[in-house]
Amino acid sequence: MIPLEQRRYRVGANEVTSEQFVIADEDGYLLRFFADIPADPQIS
Image 1 (tube, rainbow, N blue to C red):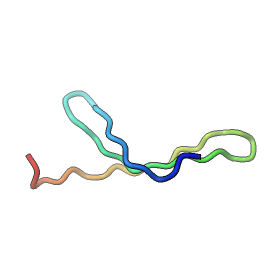
Image 2 (image 1 turned 180 degrees about the horizontal axis):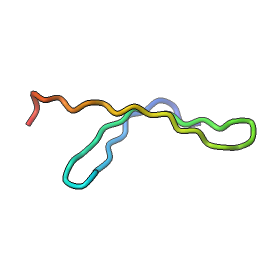
Image 3 (image 1 turned 120 degrees about the vertical axis):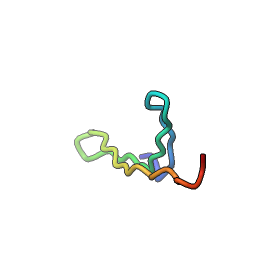
Image 4 (image 1 turned 90 degrees about the vertical axis):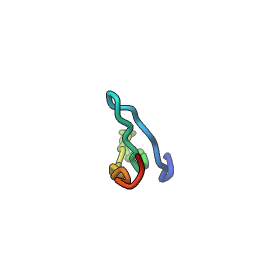
């Protein structure tokens, strides 16, 4: 299990920030849940 965290990813020339966590189900599959965090339009 990975607790809730924020991660940044580079997509082309842009950077995307997501909040995510990972859990394993009883069959051993890893499930990743995430939501993108919108960029602050005030920051250039």
